Amino acid sequence: MSKYRQNLPQLSDRLFLTDGGMETTFIFHQGMDLPHFAAFDLLKTAEGYQAIASYFRTYLDFAVQERVGFILESPTWRANPDWGRRLGYTAERLATANREAIALLQLLRQAYETPDTPIVISGCLGPRGDGYSPTAAMTVAEAEDYHRPQIEAFAEAGADLAAAFTMNYVQEAIGIVRAAQGVGLPIVISFTVETDGYLPNGQSLEGAIAQVDAATDHGPVYYMINCAHPTHFADILTPGAPWVSRIRALRANASTKSHAELDEAETLDDGNPAELGQQYQALRQQYPHITILGGCCGTDFRHIEAICQACLPVAWASLTQNPLAAIGL
Image 1 (tube, helix red, strand yellow):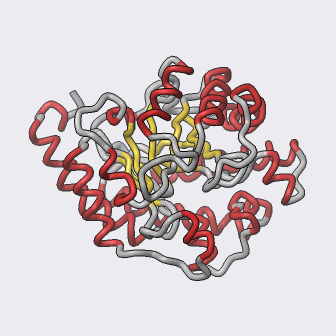
Image 2 (tube, rainbow, N blue to C red; image 1 turned 30 degrees about the vertical axis):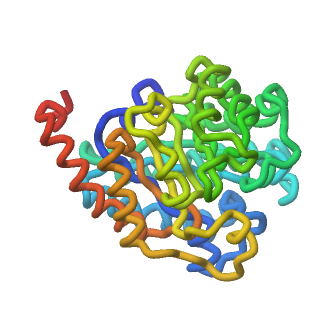
Image 3 (tube, helix red, strand yellow; image 1 turned 90 degrees about the vertical axis):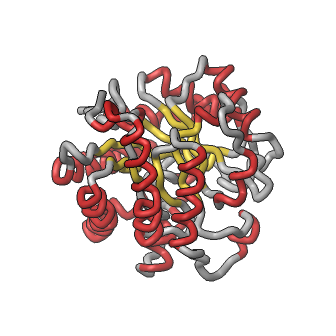
């Protein structure tokens, strides 16, 4: 059963964390084999299931310690038909994997949630194609049909919401929003940008958000930016702009490299966790409505710890400026 679908706690002013780069953590730090970056495939073995649970426990222990909220994103970024087929999954097995991923997160929530650490369960979905390049783009209707089964599986399994990561063109994002609206599941759209702050197809982030909102009656509950370094997008954000107020979450890369450079890299560029935390802090000071913080490629627990330690003082400062907010009013 869903717990927060009708009342998402991350829409408040309190700070929420998410995890770092799960796939890069497993591949580069734990030496796992993840064909096609498909973390969901680990669920088919007891060892893989425990590896995912252990990964999340590290973050949840920290969130409880720091008394911040946490959003558990399912390890299902690649669990859609095309990528599943490459791994030998039938439609039925894929739906089962998506449901099992949500069930695992529900068990973790039962074990860790406290009044100070609300835990939200999000079904993660990714693009049909390459997250870095909008090749073989779909129409809105095609995207809606393509992504609906995965979103339905999340809804049936009791996810609180779904989040579409690494979106690089608007038609796929619009189709995903409409599919989520059709099953009554709140949806987050996360765009990725290149080093110039524009989507891989050259569209501005402002234009992409405006187009999705116009086509879906402001369907996404909020937007996110992921798989880009803060230096790639900080300069395109405008304080007070209505479209910027729609962005509530950041999951940045550790590296300042471009997507093309990351694709060609043979070693992990994990950047500087402390510096990344400071960059998040600067963004939070300018855009205090961005309250959901995590990481993407190259990040791990060290980065999330640094981000939290840098941004918690900003969060507490905003609460003390509004005493009623400190007691949830």
